[in-house]
Amino acid sequence: MRKGTIWTILGVVVAVIIAWIVVDIALKVVFFFGKILIVAVVALIVFFILRSLFSRRDA
Image 1: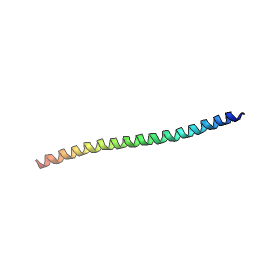
Image 2 (image 1 turned 120 degrees about the vertical axis):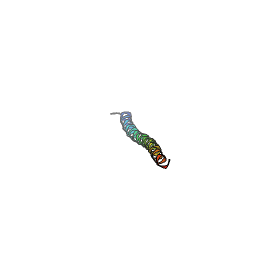
Image 3 (image 1 turned 30 degrees about the vertical axis):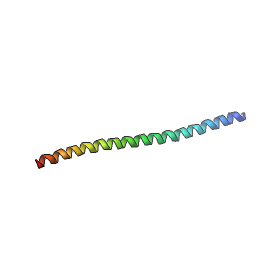
Image 4 (image 1 turned 45 degrees about the vertical axis):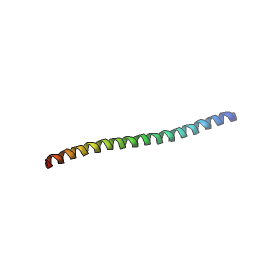
């Protein structure tokens, strides 16, 4: 094996490891913001439901 081939293989392995870490972090961030968005929508729906229930009792 030539020295260049070893460096190429080592470079590919390092690139795959770095890509794995970057994709893992990116997906965690995307899922986190997705969760926040879903929680905000559900909280808004619950807020309007509670507001409508309490406004009927007051009227």
